[in-house]
Each structure stands twice: as structure tokens, then as C-alpha cells.
Amino acid sequence: MTDLFEQALAGAGWRIERAAARDGTRGIAVANRDSGGTRALVTVVGLGVESTALAAHDGWDLPIDGSTIIETASGPRLLVAELLPDGVPSTWVTPVEPPTTRPVPAFGLELARRILAEHLRGAAVGRLHPATVLVEPADHALVAVAQRPLRIATSVAVEGDRPLLGYSTWTPGDAGREPPSMADDVFRLAILLWRWRHASHPFGTLPDGELLELLGQVATGSAPPLPLPADDLDRMLLACLVPAPAARPTVADIVMAVEAAGPPT
Image 1 (cartoon, rainbow, N blue to C red):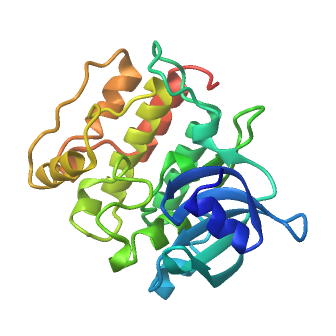
Image 2: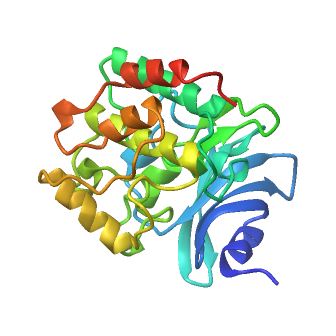
């Protein structure tokens, strides 16, 4: 039996391979076009997406295949398809149960290096999420990063209080609706790497509302509760989560710490 999101995609000629997120008729999924061999990352959100959210961020977006308004059980929605010939969300290849500490996966180190390159060019990256970090299942190589679904899913005022992928990779700056910053990139990257190492969030399991409130408190200078580090890399990642942006390590520091921790998986 199909759900509302799957029905919405089917009505637009797309067959879901697997969904990364779904909420009623909204969602993000890897899908295939019924009329041909096109494979894409498809995002369905409400109407009113800002043009700046759709515009390409070089190096951080997939090639766009098209955008169209579709009719769904919840009324008209915007469907955006981005070409994805290969790769799957990293959430499909990483364990979901907390293990003993594991090495950072190869795609995690490559992502850190890409963020470092962006910083060396003087630019911040902004929103990222494990579900839109796309990897090769066999060797865990980084295929691409899809940032557009995150931008469009948070740019629609009528979408409700919760973004499609929640607040788990939001930063204090995101909570305050501030522009992307390099210090918040550091904060976000530390959360991502911690999740890929430990299959858990460094702030623990919190409902969305409590997590958003905690991020707001960090933005005003309150230190978040943090777990005990298992090794030097953990200590580096936890240092990236301090309230004062200027006190956080740099992405270059993170890359060196990941490389020093041993070969990625």
C-alpha cells in the first residue's frame, strides 16, 4: 500500500527507489522516471519556494532536471528533480545502532576536505544533512552533496514548524535564522562526523522542539551537554560545539584530526 508521498510522485510519473524523508505529501526520495531511465533525487514541498533557494550553489548541488507544480492529496505542491545517476544517501550505508567508536567513513573525510576548500576561497557552505550527502555504497566514496533540498524545504513559510529532515544538523546560526558562517560550518561538520562515528547525536536524543531550544541557548552562550570523548578525534569534534564561534577549531584542524585518527572506512 502506498503512502501519500509515494502517491504524489507516482502521479507525476516517478517511481520511488527509497525515500530519505516523508511527511504527508512532502518528501525527499531517490526515484526513477517511469517514462525513461532518469534517476533523480526528487523533493516535494509546498508552493512559494524562493528563487534563491532553487539557484545552484556550485559544488554543493546536483544538476537540476526540472521543477513543476503537481497536484497531490494535500493540494498543489512543487516537485524539484535533480539528476542522480549514481550514489545513495549516506544514511542508507551507515549503521543506525550505536557501536564502539569507528573510523570516519571515506565520504566524511572527503566532505571535510570540500568544506575546507570552500573556506579557503572565503565562502561558507551552510546547511548539510547525512541524507543529502550522496555516496557510493560499495567503497563509501563521496559522489555528490545535494544542498538544494535543504534550502527549499526551509524556505517555504507555510510548510509548518518542522523542516523535512528535522533539526538534527542545525546550528546555533540556523536557529537564529542567520546567514551561513564558517564557524557554523565547523559546528555542523562536527555533528555529522560524530554521527557517522557513533551512530548517535552528540547532544543525545532530544525531541525537535527541545533540540531547537538548546541550539538557541548555545547561540546566547550556554554550553550544550556533551558526551565523554573516546579519543583525540572525539575531543576535537566536541571542541567544535562550544558556544563561542571564535573558540571553535577550524575545518583544517578537523581534517588533520581525522587523518591522524587512521584510515577511513
